[in-house]
Structures are given as structure tokens and as C-alpha cells.
Length: 447
Image (cartoon, helix red, strand yellow):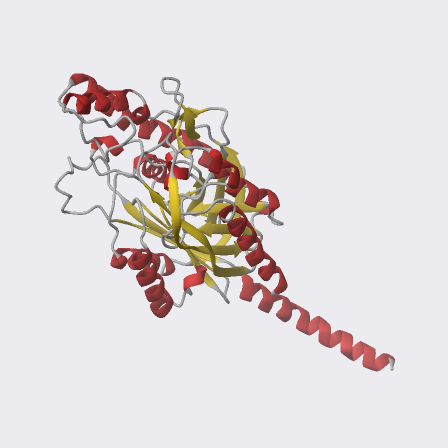
């Protein structure tokens, strides 16, 4: 009997290193990153030039068994057809399932485009640069955003402006990727704020997310790729944003001279602005400076969080889990118009359909929804998440038929996001939060 025990022990001693190695090999992380310039050679007729170049960026993560990708594109929207075309091709040719993607626009209001070919190519390039990697997570804070729904003191009605007392998540969530030798590969950072600063210039620009990513990349001598992911910014604006102040007043007066009242409207871009006027020119130049200022401020916070990622706590291997689901609830159609501060009437409309996404990298959870979501919904998700390291991404993986998605309490506001939303009150918030939490429960069950 004792001889048999000795033989068994000897076999275990021999096999243990092999078993441990095999497990490590199956779960060891590899990561690769790439960016490509997607600045169009031909600009729209109403464009007044290029303020800064725009890019598509991607990170591919692999653990030997599963591969996933994070994609960020300097455009306003990534439509449903673009999402379907790109995700299907990536799945077919690169072997990354569509549900393993988190793809979002930076939502700059100063750029459109980004072809399906370009988005595929940036993911392909990132996948070709895979290297053994370790992954870290951390959070910081930045105060460049603010709740944008406020009662106008002149009209006593809802309008856009800095509501310092309104709900606003200042969290900067950061995922860092580096080689096992400590060389930087990429950083994925998440912040809740509309990229609208340069919209009135009518110039192509990545706005403050583009400025932030370029600043970070330059700080690392372009040895890193920096991806901005759009947080729950449905009701969040840059804290300093001239469009809701001086430029708004100038446009209202200019249109009034032509007999048109736009006091409850917001024409796109810089329509109605005399850009040869010295005051207008100064204000627009200040906006151009502002994206660089905010880009540097946000970029410095991302870098600070990266510096505090202790190597010993970074993960060199782990599980990758991804899932998606569609949720549906009653929708509505608005009767009449008016940007804000007016009573609205509605008829029943087609159901709202949302695509919810979850990507888990070890114990980091990235939840997403394909719509512009109010900040409190993301705050509730992070509060109720069983995983402490949780991120919420708006406009992830296509675009829903919902319009803005207010949290339940916000439906009492006569803001333009609420008035234009196709969501009936009382459904969306729980559908999103519970839907992503259900995906997380599925991840736990399949461990």
C-alpha cells in the first residue's frame, strides 16, 4: 500500500509542473494595438477645413482560448449597418466573434465617416501585433464635465447649461496594457462627456477625446495607442462650452434680424454665425484652444492612474468572457417640436430595441449599450455590479432606435433629451442595468 502511495506521489510531482504550465499557457494574456488615420481626403461642402486629424484605434486581447477587441473611432456615430458589416467581417476573417467586440465612437460632433474597411483594418493590424502582456486597472477623477440640463434664469425654462448641482460622474476609468517586460502597449480610458466643443467651427476635429489620446500617445513617444471610450454622457457636457452662452446669444440675434426665432432651437454646426466678425472669431479660437486644454488635463489624469498601476497587481493571465443580448420595451413618437422647456404630446410608437454588451477581462467588466445614456443609469450599474472594476460604455456596438435614454427620474424634466426620447417612462433604466447584470450572472455561471 505504501509503495502505491509513493508511486502516485511521484507521478503527481512529475505532472504538476506540466499541468500548471498548461493552465498558464491557456490563460496567459497577449495584447496588440494599432491606430490608423481616417481623415477623409474630401471634406463635405460646408466644411471649413481640418482642425486636427481623426483616427480609428483598436486593442486586441487574447488568452489562448478567447480573443476580443476594443475599438474607438473619432466620429460622431457608428451606425447599425456599419456595426453589422464590420463585426460580421471581423468574426468571419479574424475569428473574433461579434459579441466579443466593444466598438464605440468618441462621439465628436466635428467628424463623420470611418469606413467599414478602415475599421476592419485597424482591428486586423492590432491582432497582428499580439505580444505577451499584463493588464492593470485603476480609476481617477476629472472635473472637465458637468451635467448639462439647467433652468435658464432668463426664461425659467429648461435649457442647456452647466448644472453644477446635477448628477455627474467624474470618474476616469483606465485599463492599461503593457508587455511582460513593462513596455507600454495601449491604454483604454473611459469618461462621460459630450465631445461638442469644436462643433461651431465647422472644421474636422476629434474634439477633446482626440486631443486627449494624441497627448497621451505623444507623452509615450507614440509607443502606445490610447483609446477613448464614451461613458454615459447623455446629459453631460464639457464644463466650459461657449455654444450654450455667448455663441448662442449671437446666433439668436443674427437669426432674429432675418425674422427667424431660434431661441428654442439649436441649428447644427456654426449655422447663422458670421465667422468674419471679430467677436465670433475670438470665441471660436478659444474653443479650439479649449480642446487642447481639456485634452491635456484629462490626459494627465490618465497618465497618473497608469503610473499608480503596481506591476505586482497587474494580471498576466485570466479569463475572457463576452456576451450580448437584445432588450425590448414600449416606445413612443413625439407630436410637435421644440428643443426644451415645452410641454410635449406623444403617440404610441414602435418598441425600443437596445443591444446590451458585456466584455469581461479577468475581473474587469465592460458593460455597453448602443444608445446615448444618462449618467445616473451608469452610476446605478456600477453601484449594483458584483464586480468592483466596472466600466459603462455608451453607443457601444451600433446605434439603437431609442434616441436619448434618460434615467427614470429625469422624465420629469422638459429637457431636449427627454422630450425627443423614444422611450416611454419607467422601462429603459431597469432594462439596461438588469440586462447587463444578467449577462454578468451568466458569466459567473459558466466559470
